[in-house]
Length: 131
Image (cartoon, rainbow, N blue to C red; front, side, top):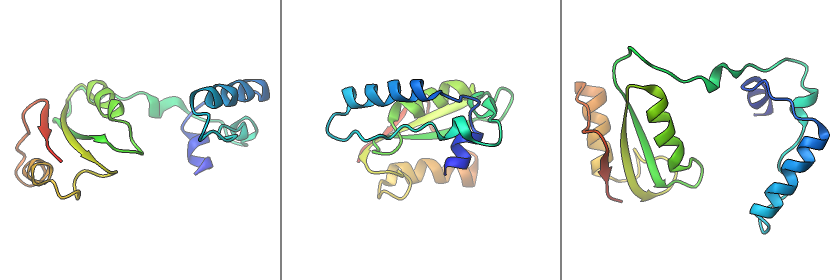
């Protein structure tokens, strides 16, 4: 996991910067905070690359993005941001809980994804599926 994280960014925070980040985490998440942010990438033997941060699918076929409002692992805002960055993104919002909307039991999400993958039919822009 750390190899992927370090490879996906050219950022190499110093020990002082890492300490500042950790203090900020403790302010925002006092109950859950640990020394979660580490400076391991500062010592990683291979330089990182910021290419993963540049997202633009201009000219591609439309890309369906599913965002769950109650996803504990992937904030909904990331789905909104990704949809905009892609330039061709079409967002489907799942109003339910859990990580992974497709197999959540929502017939609406499954219908939208299946129609796209199997028939090439796009959901309407800003589609919303109940839990």
